[in-house]
Image (tube, rainbow, N blue to C red):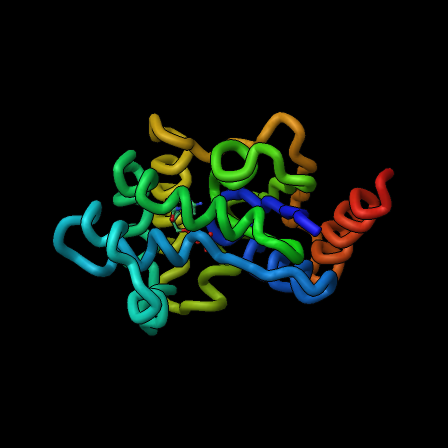
Length: 196
Ligand code: CDP
């Protein structure tokens, strides 16, 4: 069975948690596409060459989740050649046998417009920054500033800007706990699998 769940949305909206839970629930494979951009961002040197040569060791680094890696990712993600170098791998993953969940910024709009399910997961910047601060610690005001800066760059870029696909189902997690957010996503996928 070929079945793609595309989950897009801004920084720290809960995409990762929802994606992992949906993949586990349905036995689908999961790809966190943000990690690809983070790995390119932290590698240094020419980002286009880094994107073309990305390997398993780059994705296994333990410094990919930091605020700095997020900022570096969003800078290299604005380069069309970097995005182009990563497209094929993501498309193949999305349409591989057995079902796939991909989370990112452009999965439903660019990588896999034919995805069977498209979700746009969001929350207010303050709620998202608070969640990221609980994960990473540090100064919460700085985390909020970084989240807003990254949102502006991701939504404002020319190539594959962050925006909901026209047929995406919106899930606002501002007032939802993890279980409720996951349940909302699972309900949408179940309905599509049942053909309703
Ligand atoms: O986990 P978080 O939502 O903070 O970020 P992420 O998903 O790891 O993505 C890091 C950065 O990579 C984003 O701010 C985007 O600039 C970029 N990205 C992208 O452009 N396209 C994707 N499909 C995934 C991430």
